[in-house]
Length: 343
Ligand code: PHE
Image (cartoon, rainbow, N blue to C red; front, side, top):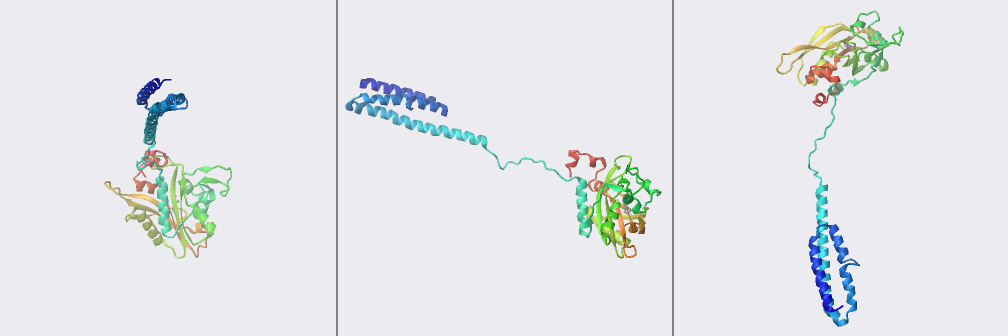
């Protein structure tokens, strides 16, 4: 090859390299570009190899020409690669970006209002030295009635519309009922550990009632039993007033009326004065109470000459409805999120 021809080829190559270089917009383009010109079989490499054919003097003329093209091409290539790689990295960073300061709304659960009230009651009574007891929902007829001084013939058995769990037996120790109140836990506690006793028992109770906004076939009560030496009605009044005032976070007025429950003597009905802001106040029947009947102490194997005490049973469901101004008991058994989410 003549040196003139070689010079022409170098000039031609340089022109094409410059034009092609301008078209590179991606790393893929760049790879193709490299293969075409700089790779082992690339045009520049081939042209460099053809230098061999020239004499040393000719080489001195044409060598620097092609070296100049090669040096520039290498430098341009590296610069282009760096720019394109940086652009790819930036693009990736943009799409992978996480805003750690962004506030996402997270839905959390909350306690059922009945559970909240139960916990609060337990807290208040713990503060007065009471323990929290538990008993089964399916109770022996004996514990639910007989031991509480309600014999089979007693009309009080019908007073509480009982769900019987039929066994075909007449023996109250075998027959079962869904407990109609939490009072059988009094008997369980006495038989288990004797006196003295300071306990409350919150739990579910069942009665076969006509259902409406204030009656459900299952509701919650809590029982309170205190047995010790020299206990009288003033202790009952003191404990109740303290409890109600702490629970409603203000001083509560109560009204005590005579009432009849076979398991207490005397028996009392206790109402509480209740006001909702903007509405007329009224007396609400809240609980039954009294001094534990000697027959009940006997069934619980307690020495009635040494110990006596009081018991009461409160509508926990009713307390909940009062506290949260819920006017329909059926909401409590619904699983409606817009209701439950308010607590
Ligand atoms: N067990 C009664 C009821 O459910 C309430 C009560 C409990 C009354 C303890 C007196 C003493 O109606």
